[in-house]
Amino acid sequence: MRDIFTGDNRVFYYTAGVLVVSTAVFYLFKKYVDMGELDATLTQLNNTINNTISDTLPVLGLQEEKSLIVDNVPIQILGETYTLPNNEAEFREKCKSFLWFSYRRNFRAIGGTTYTSDRGWGCMLRCVQMLYAQTLLRHYYEEYKEWRWPQNKSGLYNTILRDFLDDPNGLYSIQQIAKAGCSAGKDVGTWFGPNTAAQSIKVLKEFDKKLDLCVHIVMDNFMCIEDIKFYAKEDGVTWSPLLLMIPLRLGLNECNVVYMSNLKHCFDVEQSVGAIGGRPNSAFYFIGYQGDKLLYLDPHVTQESVSPDGIDLNQIPDDTYHTERVDLLPLENLDPSIAVAFYCRTEQDFDELCVEFENTILKGSGALFEMAHKRPSYMSPPRRTPLDKLPENYTAEYDEVNTEDCSDSDGFEIISNS
Image 1 (cartoon, rainbow, N blue to C red):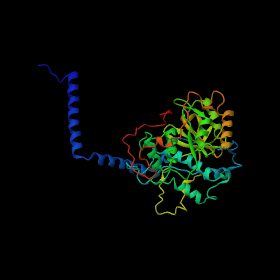
Image 2 (cartoon, one colour):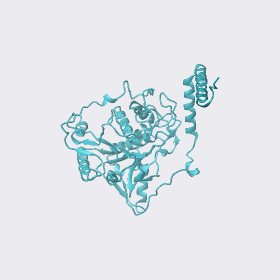
Image 3 (cartoon, rainbow, N blue to C red):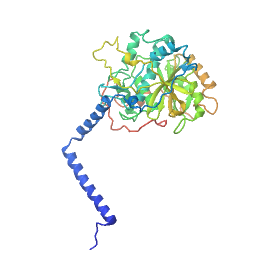
Image 4 (tube, rainbow, N blue to C red):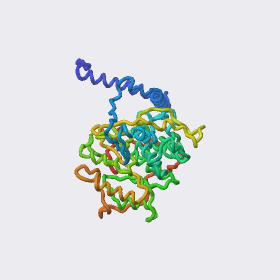
């Protein structure tokens, strides 16, 4: 009789035996072990690791070398210019006055999950919080250029910060942004790209009834002035202050150098409120540039969460929400997916911004996007249906996130209209 356990046959029967035994073990395991409880335990273990591991990379020498700010080279920050060492005190005060949101740990779990920290996945969410908080500070303080922390703190400042605390009922909390992102197809615990982050803020703004602000996101690299004015004038006459966010794709896998000069121009205009982007899988909030490097606030620092429970909301302990530390990212290291943003309090501000666009960032082969004054005949007219994109039964009150229908993808997405 031929030995069937030789050569290829032996491999086949060995593999089949392993599969049979593995299947049997799996079904026995599934029968006697609560899979939901096991999954929750594993997730909790992952969070415990994230919550307890300190940021020791610099100690271990694994942190990449930072670019340093140099003297006697102008620094541009949202339409303002500083040169060190002459303006060093003013520069530090300006940077420290931004609201800085970073990773936090030990906050109340994001509904439907056991995530109590956003360390390792929430950097883009923190960046869009910074950009939006900057917008609100500028919106509520008309003399924002002179506003400095902590000298100009007020009850209004505390009201703004309150909405960003790690509280499930905070309008712009990490919990709410994660929830809004899930409705757009991003599972809790996965990276957001700039476009998804922008869309999440637009969704949440719909529940801030006291805020007179139009959030408009330019899609497909085409900006129509007529349409934006339609959205910013809800009654057809009165202008609502506008947050204009423009997601861009400046290359396929890396940024094309042809766009770099025009990208820097975005920080030259006084309407700028910065940009969100970064390196692949590491998001930063960009506030300006020096030379060929972008200046940014870094969310990759894990701090203890600040809960609104048991504190005076008129005197929020906010030392951990401000920092003098800013870093530089060489433009050649920039991920090609980025979103630039602008705040226009008046229609005149918007008109002047459009003129700036025409004279700078829309010129030459490095034009960042297309712009038209009138809607092309082939395009459908705009409609005011902001609530159409909200998930069914979505409320400003916090409830559980259903993650079953959320896709799980990493990194910065390629921008599309989907």
